[in-house]
Length: 501
Image (cartoon, rainbow, N blue to C red; front, side, top):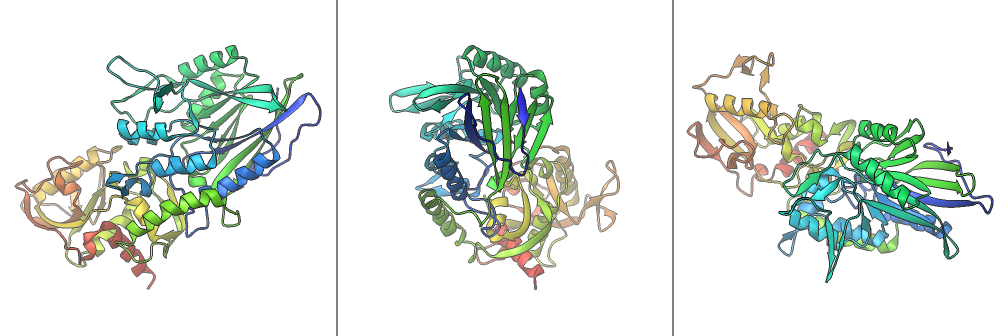
């Protein structure tokens, strides 16, 4: 039996007799940044660590879990240290310092190469689990492995938390984890999430789990389907959506916290060993500048933040300066920016145009260059623009024939849903099947148009035929280091700052 007693406000639950045990799980999901955001107002893993430390002091049966998406994307992950990109190493180091207990894979973990992901697995001092994600090898799919010196252990399909009373185990909480198959990679094999979850559930039952919970990284509709397919699954801690939610489904509850540790979900449970009754109190805790930081974790965060700050100051003098107020949130999610014209895309293209005032006809840039996969709310700082465009690169000015321009625009439109989808400025279509329009007139094959775009695209990436050798390209201007256009991030930052004058 499940009794749910809390929502976004807490109602304390506690063991009241010898037949009851109390335990706590702190849930994070979709965390890409280790330091606070919005000028220090929200988030910060050192703050979360302080909360968890306090809870552990109250109850030793306190566990910290991550419901996927934490190794990528992040600005720090793109920085090179000793000639090697960080690729999530900073996140593992901070999570180790926080004494995480368990993590599962999110779709963004597989943005990393197989080699880099293996390094992160090996560096982890916490456990991983997944019931439906496996490593493709020449011999076929197998569990991912964690290698520490001469010892190799596999990532298990299921996991159990042991709830202790004194020196004995009073109850066992089984955890099953599944991940959505939205990020296909050659080295990753995805099994059917529902089928594998059911198998994991049977396994946990055989292991005599008193309770079975989900730790998932699928969309909420898949979580709902999972809950309906396993009526005895009482609680699901999920990720992927980025927005906090608490969704009741039949005999289960689905909980998701806000991305980037703007909130943390604190789930307190009281389980009666005799009656099998479970009481759940879930409290969504805002992680703000009102929350103190753990000194030991803050030391690790500060080390990595100093590295990042040094790199950013090579481009812009004041990384923490608030340059824009996003009263309407800017949509930096992957799904939107790879398929639609977003308000964030509009700002980026306007910044690119401002790098060449009165010199260009139109702008295009690939949505795949936006790597935030989150919303920007309230105060936007220079660092946030680096988070959107972590790889930088220059804004090139290109003169090209209308025939090539139309081919490029058609290709970008056809690639909706991928990184090659193009965000555009000063070019429109009256209808989906109509001609491309510049200043209200169809683009002419023989006319020459001046375009601002990214140097990445001009290298044939994403758009394979857009290279300097294409006969449709008339002239290319590559900016020098003294020009604003030399770094796309600086161009966007200076554009936003100009709006405040």
